[in-house]
Each structure stands twice: as C-alpha cells, then as structure tokens.
Image (cartoon, rainbow, N blue to C red):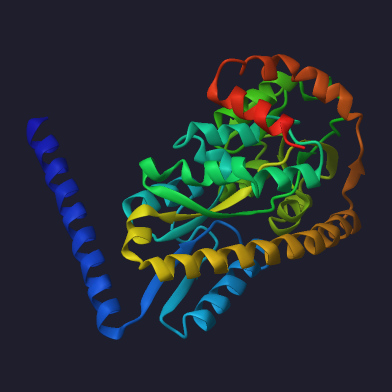
Length: 334
C-alpha cells in the first residue's frame, strides 16, 4: 500500500508542476504578443441566452481593449461540470466560468440564500437586491476562496417539470425523486415540500429522466427547452419556488494579474453583458414557453400559497444564521 500512495503523491506533484509550467508559458506568450487571452467555460449550449450574452461580452471586450484582451468561450461542459469548473477557476486553470449560485454554496455558504424558496417578491425586487449592496457583497465574498463575481445573469424562476403527473400541491411530490443541483439548500427545499431530492449533473439529466432514475426536475423555461427535457417531461407546474441567479466568476489569480485599467474595463463589459442577457432572457423565456407547449407539454399554475406555507419551517430554521440574516436583509429591501 505504501508504494502506491507514494506513486499517487508523485503523480499529484507532477500534475501541479505541469499546470504551473503551462500557466507560466501561457502568460509568457500573452506578454510576448501583448494579447491577454481569458478562458470562459460554462455548461450550457450555444443556443442559450447565457451563451449569447457571453458572445456579446467577447465582442465588446475585444472592441474596447482594441484587441488587447480576448475571450475564448467553452460551452457544453467541455471543461467539466459546474462544480469542476468552479474548482478550476479557484486554481487559475480556467480564468472565468458561469455557474448557478446553487452549486457555489458548497464553496461560499452565503450563496445558499438564493436557493431558499420564496424570498423574492417579484422580478423588480430580485434585481434591486442583486444590483444593490447585498448583491455586491455576495459577489466579493468569495475572494478568500479564490474567486470573485463579476456580474449576475438572469436565470428566471425555477418550477417543477415531471414525467407522469403534474405537481399541483406539495403532497403531489411525496415519494417522487426530483433532480436538484448540487446544493444542500435546494435539497432541503425539495425535502420540505415532501419530495426526494437527487443531485445529478446537468449534462447527465436527460439520460437520467429517460432511464427513470428520477421522476422529474426543476428549472426555468429556457433550460427545459434547450435541454430538450420536454421530450420526456410533459407536465410543467409553475410554482416558481426559487429565483436562483447565475453568476460570472473570475479567478482571483487572473484578476490580480490584470492592470487596474483592464480590471475596470472587464467589469464594465461584464455589466454590459448582464443587461444584454436580461433582455435576451425575457425574449427566450417567452419563446421557450411557446416551444414546449407546442411539443405537447401541459402547463399548470398551482396555488403558490400552498407551497409557501409548506416551507415556513425551513425559513425559520435559518434564524440566527448568516443565511438567515441575509434573508431578512433581502425581505427588508424596498
């Protein structure tokens, strides 16, 4: 056993050394050509409004930097799952990634506040929080973990879609296996509503639904559409339990290598892409609802008060915690 352990350690150090050499070589080439290339990876496909917003950011960054800063985009989980990409950003192997704030809570517990159900009154309240002091604080809170937020992207409201029956009240979830993101808070929410939460990577979900590993999932209309999960799940119940934003993260290592002027430029372009993504998201949401219904998906509008009542104990469980304090601050935002 000892030789095997020694061999594993040697391989680990070799991998770290190679990563360091590759990173140094990359920055050496960047300096020689006077061009900084930033790698941005995400899990969605090229038709998604998130990807289109990134392409917008890519073009604006090249224009405003006069070609000095280039953005390379890697969609479709080419560089790993959301969790794996977060870890790579921490290490500086990838410069930037887009992730939902739900899996991010494993690294930054405060991000779990966004996965608590029914904390936002409406879309106006949601954006007032994200663009205000609370949202800004949460963007910067991950610097001690090697990441910092640049901007938020709209990810709409998450609702249940299922294969065999609609979810019209919490009792309908009893005994049902529902896919959730890798988030303790998302799991607690499904449990509070009576279901059985099952974390599965996004890229594996279509097959999991096909093979009846899970009975359904929960997500927004564009994701139901672009993933083609509507081919399997024909019931979409708009209980709109959470409004979980996406966030663009940049590695602290990458950020600190940029000059103050380039940091300001990148932040400016990220903010522009956020506004573009909000616009594109609204258009795509309307289009996606039309697409899934034309494909035979039945859309339901359950009484949300039944779901709100069911998660009151979950809300109360956060009293006296950091997340509980954030919930109160969000609810106090006018």
